[in-house]
Length: 370
Ligand code: ADP
Ligand code: GN1
Ligand code: MG
Image (cartoon, rainbow, N blue to C red; front, side, top):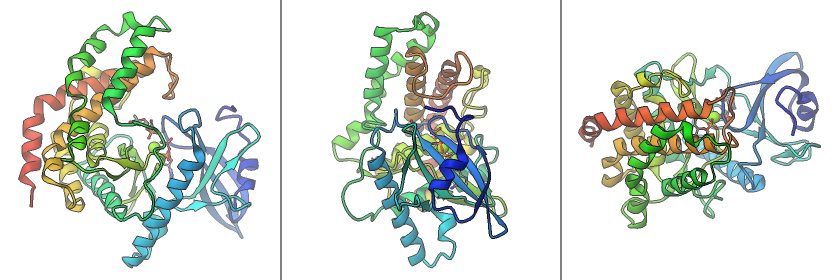
């Protein structure tokens, strides 16, 4: 597989139905999984941008199924928006650009798998949430996204990564990595492993509620990292939810929990200053307000677990980073030694901070009930 820098973007772009003449392109964004590029074309003299993405097929093993999900979800969201008389549906939901052969994806000569999207202009994503207003907007956008998909017709969506948020399954993978210890890194992770094990008893709580039928399966996003929603430059509104690869059956609390994980943290996810990491209560409160404003479909049990979901999704992500560190950094992109271990440490510090404040956080959310 080519590296990001050696990609012939002009050649890839030429295979898609981009309207205009190719000018230039460059790597874009800070995702951990796929390779994203921004390309510029000139459309009869007017500059126009597109997003090109190469899917990580080691992780997304059935790209045709994945793209079938994305095509259904984006088409449904746009149709619903148009029915609501939104005159900017192509800014409020992603639009796939097909290949010149009319396909949703392209396989290049190196067996890379590519897709293209219209570029959402005058909006951007933020890795770190600096104000409650942004948290509110992002959470409301994710809730609106869930609401748009509540009546998605047809078959159950494909599970693009099976058992993605099955936390006990993530623990099983950690135990296996500890047992195999292929890079002799176990001796570096004593405190992290102890912490992970001390929290394992809680891992199945949401899945148990789901098996008991107390909380329902829904169509959820499953990767509601705060940089997966575009915030409008002028109005500050959360305009468009992106990164749809993991949209599939799930629990609403996975989505709320991952917002808490990614937005309430006061430092970057990979900060080495993990002793300073804490959960910012004012950001949690803004997330809860924004989410509950548009997620009027939640039942009482879902509402009662909003703070817990933040703890669980943060724990799960820490366990995944720790597992990947032990396995030699095979899943998440890394840019330095111990990058995944640093990420694991911030996540576990955030879990501790959420636990310390959990009663107050949930109390705030309870007070918002209608
Ligand atoms: P990853 O799976 O690697 O996180 P994303 O789909 O989230 O990939 O894209 C990475 C970044 O590219 C996003 O954070 C966003 O800034 C930008 N981006 C993605 N899609 C679009 C789009 N349609 N319009 C404008 N920017 C986009
Ligand atoms: C990955 O692709 P990106 O960067 O939005 C990961 C999420 C993790 C996140 C941690 C498909 O998200 O599950 O929570 O990193 N996505 C996948 O930052 O595994
Ligand atoms: Mg992303």
